[in-house]
Length: 320
Image (cartoon, rainbow, N blue to C red):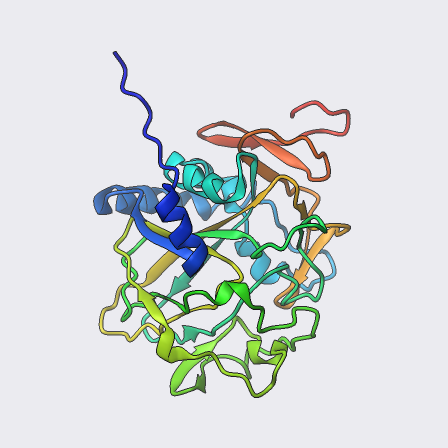
């Protein structure tokens, strides 16, 4: 008799704690030797960008940091990763049964790198000024659910995550404000005694109250060994420590971001414009990881098999 699949859904107590704190975990998805092997193989495959979703635009601006996005759409390991039951069951516990993965991205931190600045994201308009996700009007969401998985050890010394529990209930930043992209000016700035940056932006420019500062006395460090992950609302105040350089090993994390199927993704947009670049959404699609999609307002790609993870819907509605 085959073993019954394990149910990873949150218990009522776990769900209440998640709603109180805004995050849950760490949880173990892979054993350290397993993720070391999988990541080594995937890293080699990722060097081939021939099937990557985002290409440099012909105007010469380049895809910018968005070239780092959504490699789950062309890489077999990452395609399977975002659909792992250990992740999807827990995400669906919070969002409901019908769930899309709308973005993934890598977060490397090398020895000596600054920490990532405190930030929140409700609509992900923070870099471009244009909402990238839009919930129905009768909802008061916390942005999206982010699943941040450590592909290598992520201790405090190596750039591990920090959260300020409970802050997902209040938005301290106005994402409609403009931020200036200036990687020379906004990298490794000392803020409250810590070297921090935000990928070429100064997130403080979005503060609703210019005099407000995050209460770092309430911050919690979440350390993870390779193969573990944490789930949090993108609206939760989060940051990362600098990589102290006490080891020559880099920290690599992979984030997958999830919303209910009722949420509109990149509404009205034909390209991602941020981080000094522009990338067309022509080849982009969301991935249905749980339940059904009945709204029809997002492009959806279909998971197939390892080696060719997704196929895209053609203009006549067929799958190519």
